[in-house]
Image (cartoon, rainbow, N blue to C red; front, side, top):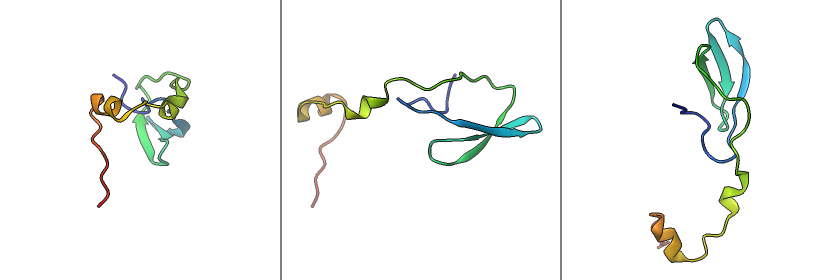
Length: 72
């Protein structure tokens, strides 16, 4: 199954080929070699604005397993 660039709005860039490997640039800027025979889907993962959605209240964040942030 897919392992790279799976989060909302994620994409990678194909930079070129090096023998039997393709060189790709991840969102973080990291360059990676992937075997040319590996399958890929052209495009971008949808729902880019997912991180802008308001959860609404602290309890809703807890339902998702996010613990409160305490400074101090």
